[in-house]
Image (cartoon, rainbow, N blue to C red; front, side):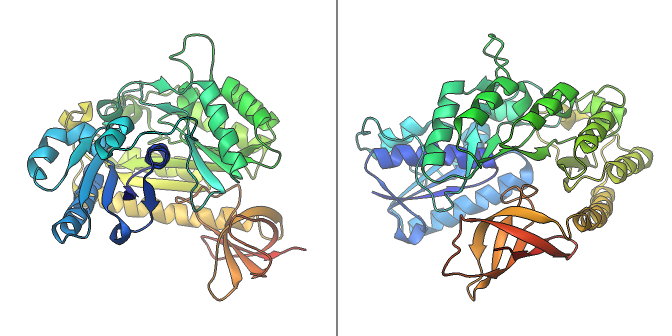
Length: 431
């Protein structure tokens, strides 16, 4: 059967979809890149916040219409949205959706579609952008932030066995991967559920020694409370781990962080970020902040702005608080008007734009290694990423002077950075 898989949401979902695709291929099914070429469409959904829920419902309706038109024969809805709203989805789409599956219920999907799974097949499929892969090291979360629905959707922490992670990393590298992006709700708690002393440093030490020279290992999503000097010192000794950390702070103010159930020792975040920059001034720091959380007054927002301005994050994703039923914060008083929250969002993103431009100027005149993601149709320009740029969420480095007869997507280049447009860097290809 020809199957189209549509992945919604985060990088963790992308990793899940790859495991599903590998199982489908092992059962003899063929994966196609467009729904119009498919017999069956599977949507791996996201249900994190209400904006995502709406986007995913719209995507299901689009596939539903294709089925009504006879362009696909079967429709399967899987993933986080089913975990959270299965009853409602079954009621709404009972006539059009052939099968519902919760996250990681891939065996149920393959059983429904038929085909006997071949033994000894790779758990990792081949993909188009093979040079960058997501490697999920854990699922679920025990932190229980008051605004977050993830524990309701995905459950509590479940670390992936270290041997399985190392095996998957080796398979990915053997298939051409040059960048491994480690994902989980919070990488810093890896192994705590094993109870045998295994932790993130244990895993990273083994992973760093197991993949080929030159492989990039990128760490995404670390809780700031569990990032300390010991972890930073360790990361600095591992030659394949990029000087890039995604550490979502959500806020800077103790009162707001306590309401979020993310209490942080006084001065901890400022100390850790300063320590990182002391060791490497060009270390890339990415974070996420939430504005408009219940109880955030003008003073606490101003102090958040001051904190962001002082730390000078290279990358910052801001979003407006979304009230989610079932979370503790849903019943909090002191909700911020939407207009005020939007104004704060606009204000902090403008500040971050200025910081990005200033940070980018530090790289003009320097040399950077990059991975080529795509090449302009007319040749000569490549969309690339350096150690500073995670796939899908960060900016690009534009490589000028590319020879398409020599350079292909997935190749690595060394560039001399010549310019900065405020968001992206530009560089010339060196011999």
